[in-house]
Amino acid sequence: MRAYVINLARSPERRASITAQLTKYGVGFEIVEAVDGRELDLEDAAAIASIAPSFLSADWFRPTHVACAMSHLNVHRKMLADGLDHALVLEDDVIVPADVSSVADAVAASMTGAEIALLNFDSPNVCMMSNRDARELPGSRQLVQPVDISQLASGAAYVITREACERMSKQALPIRAKADDWDQHCREGRFDNVRCVVPMVVMKDPRFTSTIGYYSDLSFKARLLRVITRYELQILQHAIARRRERIWRKYQQVAFEDDYRG
Image (cartoon, rainbow, N blue to C red; front, side, top):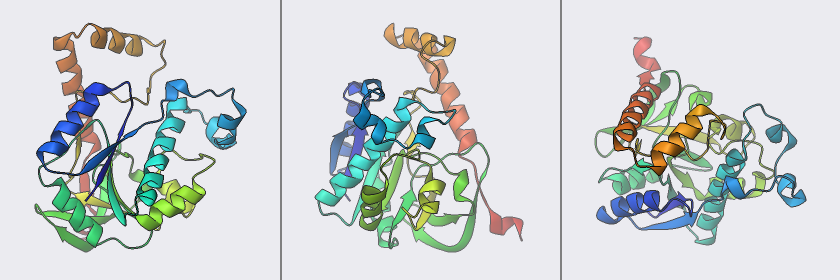
């Protein structure tokens, strides 16, 4: 299966990392340049017109959220232009296994309509899944249905159908949902269904921080991270990576509702 990798032009180290992995495992891929939130001009009338007022006024709003959503939308449009029925979409800060292509192919074979299947997901709470109608996948994995789609976040890795890309292309503008707000996408009819692969196929690389920029540029944490990165303070970089890994393990816990019911 063809993969599309979303990568910021100013992040060559991430591009090198994912390129080396996909090349090693024989995965055909294309780098799609991400929209850079730093370059979005929110004073520009055309830019404002592409964003829903409710999105702009949200407490959590940052220009990078818009940029991320637009980047994923550009990939969906690219997939349509390339005439594909399914594609694997990856962000550039992930670690993929050797069998990622065979798993993605098996997932695609079970998908219908406007559907997306998450190969990476996270939640502050344990993600509840259902064993009912689970599909067996390579590597002792399963394609399963989440009990509550609103629990799920992350657009780091997913397989998407052509019909889902068509709906996203027609309905996504003005931007009114984060790229990984799967619940809102479903409620507004852009997807018919969202499923997950467990155990998780793709992991986020703890070496890389999110480019969304959850901290204010003037905050102590943001300034500290810039100093650590600029001067390549390896001991602190390793400590931060280990902390990220611990947090992600906590945010990637899965339980099956059927087990609780006995």
